[in-house]
Length: 230
Image (spheres, rainbow, N blue to C red):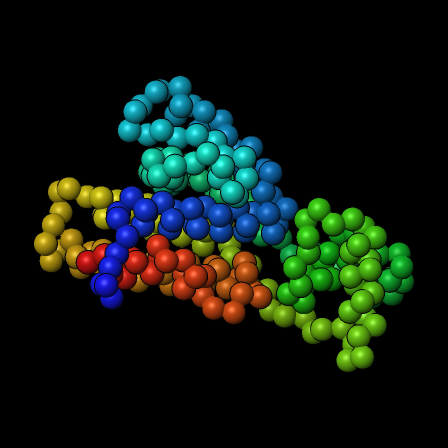
């Protein structure tokens, strides 16, 4: 039982969903989630029009991927290097938060300035929070006995980092499902890709989910299963 691995289909589905969810969280953290989905949608629709039975791709509504089954995740993975090429555009380059001027009274801060003040301190800002809620959140930190928290280093992953993650996802399952490679050579290639992939997931996961205590791949049974696939 200590060597038990999930079936390849479930292993792939769980890992692929976790990665796509992480990509959407990254885009949402920069308030680019809607733009990313708008760029992806026509490309997925163009593939659907081809009616290829081995690529049953479909558009998703949000990070819950409602209605998705293993074949849909596999299709999205097969197309990911092409579909997510839009990440190379300047539109998806992470921008630095614009903080309020030092002399500007706090009660005059805008909604974006409050969000920027929280973000540079590693505090998560609810995307749908109102201006009043953000102001109240900032005031709460200023009223703490020890004062507001310190600024933390900016470790937002670049669009190139996200592209690299998606490319590793494409390559690792391309290797796992490969039928023209076997034996020790296949095992060595898969192990090397698995270690690179998990390291990339951990780095991006820590940056996107700073409050998470353990690496993201430790909480996903499918990802842990990659280490036992061989």
